[in-house]
Length: 302
Image (cartoon, rainbow, N blue to C red; front, side, top):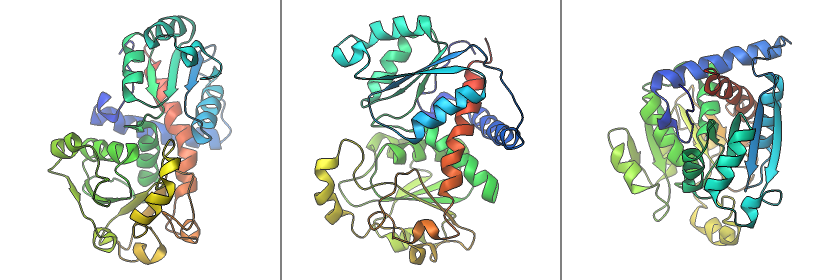
């Protein structure tokens, strides 16, 4: 298991992902009981941020601290990466100084190139194409509230973005059905749809898509880097809002998730996060515990 990376959900087997989810639940219970557990004492996590963050930074930094290690925060302003140093060179140097590295950046090719040149495990903490760490937290949250997601129906509402792509991979790895509810012109990657056509389908109408769903998930209409498209996207996505009325069309045990930050009055109604079916605060906390399980596992061989 030496020098494994976590760039997408497909880097791990379904059984490994199930193990990570259960371990995250266990680590969460330990932390809530106040137990001190420091298997990563003296380990250093390098955190490279080319995209800003709240939950990702805090969850990784708090997570490595709770496991006994330390984190070094590196923004593009703080490193030679931001001044044009080749990714390969940065990876070769930083991986000689850190025990594990997470990257939050733009192109997915950046984390792939970094991992190819790293001596230590590399974690994708978000790219324009995938956000696998969020899916670890989401799957943990569903398990805690409703049990196994296998065989259930999940509805993704909104843009076919990095979160949508990771939900497609999750449908494959956790064996559930996924309905992608997006407007024309905003579909997820065609190759992902084609590779998973046995379990993923597109439905344009939100009310139709929501029928009998067990989990509804959405994200902001304009992701980071798309701010200049905000006004145009508001027009295109105006009918793609999750509200209590939409949730009423879903299965009686349905729950709602959002990776946050949320824009009330846009992708969700003003009252959606106050609805008892919304589990977004548990979902947000679970980023911490899921990533602790992930770091523990990636460093286990050492």
